[in-house]
Image (tube, rainbow, N blue to C red; front, top):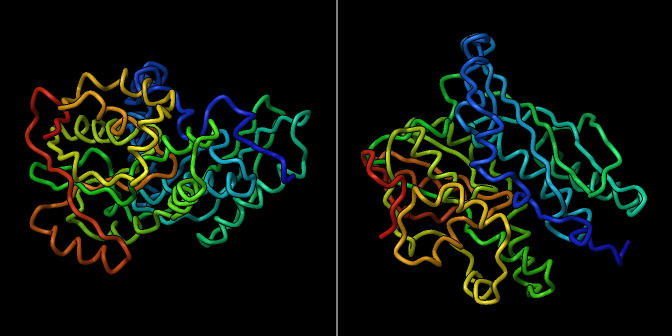
Length: 344
């Protein structure tokens, strides 16, 4: 058990394993047919949103999501806990309250023992317990690489659903967690990461985005999504495209871990970064080419990206400070322009 390094058993890590946005769009196509056939489906895959929402009675919606990936850290318990935290984030990003989860486990039985798999499940169960929900079941298969995640069911008030495509002109942009997870986890896989940097990233990935439940009741937060495998650039362009707007951002104000320059210098760039930029980089104008390595860095269990009414920003920052978040805006939304996102 002590000698196991889970990241050595997979070709990718965490949300960096996600299929590139452009390829995913080809796979999914357009989801309008499902919405026409099922009018109770408030949010489906046509929105590129974090979870599906089905209206039960005009008051309460069921929120449903699934998320799973290959190891992003070596410790089995931590891997399970991070994967569970990441999956729950999709519910929180819609403003929802999780109700229960079921596990998804793929395990290379010939390479890794059942005891190690049990530790992964234990980590996932611990996070579900922290979130106040049961890990109520699941499904497992014998797979060539270790995979773990959750399918989560939640609920939300229909009039409080937070979507990623409802931002408005003038909204200020905020992000609740710093960027750089992809860089440090790639450095760990290469044996180049400092222990304290890995620990900091792990602690951040294990922070539940449950603040989304409270934000759901704030109508001045017009749009919300979580930043995961497509990086800030990808999830922000989705918000802009869906809202028919553009974003102007100040890269110096985007929250990033202090260790980011070090791992950029060491060329610890995840493969997902390049796939991301190839998919949406033509919609982003940046001053320095190297900035793409931060904007497209795939995050695992990343923060919530919020578009906030400019008249509410002072109150918003105060409320978030009361919840333990010290946030400052890094940009705003403007009318649709040539570029979906441009940096100053």
